[in-house]
Length: 100
Image (cartoon, rainbow, N blue to C red; front, top):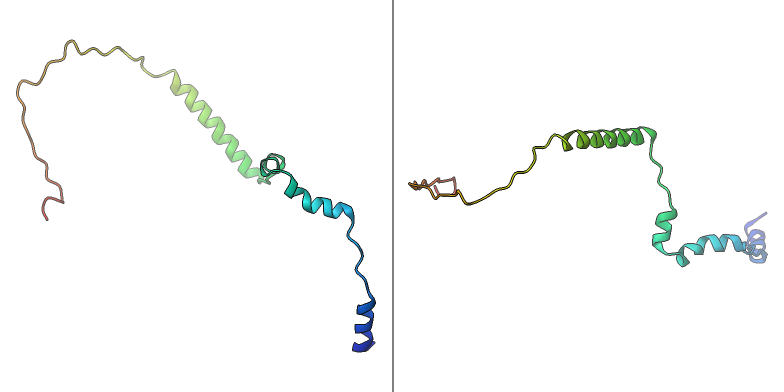
């Protein structure tokens, strides 16, 4: 075929209609809310990352459980025995900004 025959053939050719299922799938995301898509969606995570996350979670729960019982009990604080200092000594500390 030469170019002229191909052009004539292309002018006569009609594109087939799109199937309704394709249109439904493409435009369904516009009608559904973005929150619903987030809840319905999925994320692929490699197995080593999942194992590492599980180990970190187990370790943090274990550390929180063991340190939670070892804390000293809080005691009441009273200011009835509070007395001001007998002698006040003022000390000026100069930093690097004071030498400018």
